[in-house]
Amino acid sequence: MTTAAFDESEYAQRRARVRQRMDETGFDLLICQDPANMHWLTGFDGWSFYTPQAVLFHRDDQFPVWFGRAQDALSAAMTTDLPDDNIVAFSEPLVHHPDRHPFDELCELIRQRGWSSASIGVELDAHYYTARAHRHLVDGLGGARIADNRELVNWARLVKSPAELSYMREAGRLATRVMERALERLRPGSPQKDIIAEVYHTQISGLDDRHGDYTSICPLIQVGNGTATPHLTWTSDALPDEGLVVMELAAARRHYHAPITRTAHIGTPPRDVAMLAETILEGRAAEPVGEGGAAALQAARPGVTCAEVEAVWQGVLNRHGYRKESRVGYSIGLGFPPDWGERTASLRPGENTVLEAGMCFHFQSGMWLERYGAAISESFVVTADGGERLCNVERALHVIT
Image (cartoon, rainbow, N blue to C red):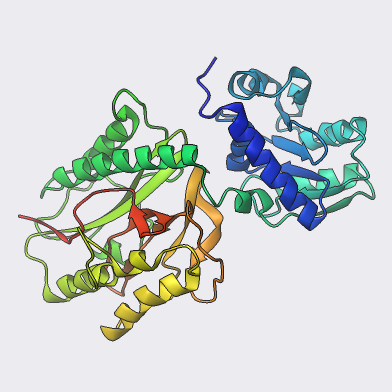
């Protein structure tokens, strides 16, 4: 047996929150294929999301139903609190079958449970909910009412419980160590692959005998002109004698993530690079309060909208002649590949989601210009005193001499 990340009362509270949202939206049954939603509702954990699987949650039932590959059913028994009857495996020959699909048997399960006339909500935008799975579901249930639930469970996850915040803070402490170790390895001639190997070692080694989990996004590193785009990965190339390096890294505890980005320059940074970094820092530290206060994070308090937080940051950029078109942040928490974002609230213009204590965001204060870019990002928790940083890495343009 694995050690459960949460007790039964935590899952009961989560399911009650989802039932309330189902009542508000008129859904009787949810079919969740997002691995994070499956995990959040049941605790299910396993690298099995590359094949069809789902968690079914009916508003009138106490427990969800896990549905997946036969060889993964034991994983469900080991990692969830579900009764044996609520762990249902599909036939192994259906894996990668050219004509039949596991959701054919999912439809039969729904009929057996008496749910075929229910109002069914599916996750149309979930990464692992394929067009083929949806077609087999619709064809197999005939005239059932099937509609997009529009990330219903994702939104239920937005405000973190105290137990979840404990893992977020652990992830932040580990991410601090990960980034500091990576910065120590930034030297002219160091192969990128060796730096990232150190990142992986530190991520998994964890802290205080507590292991780190795999992160939902792999370590990202950009060098020189590559810093003009944010999502490049490592190569075998050695770092140059001078130039920019940007790293977006993270750590995860029980799949709860704390991302962080830092920018370094090998050698004396040119004036335009230094000015961009100073502007980024000013947007997050225009009115210091206590140690390392940040203007935008100070604004991230309950009752403030996501758009209002973004406006603080954008205002500083505009005063210095910059403008960021992409969002400046997004909600984070529980995550599985390929993304640690929750796909709910974003810090951007027009986003009227009102912040509540316990929400967590990655404040991605990066700018990517035509020839280069820089980013100095923070993960934070919304509190009555503003955004509480989860990581504690020096907030500066790191100059490597």
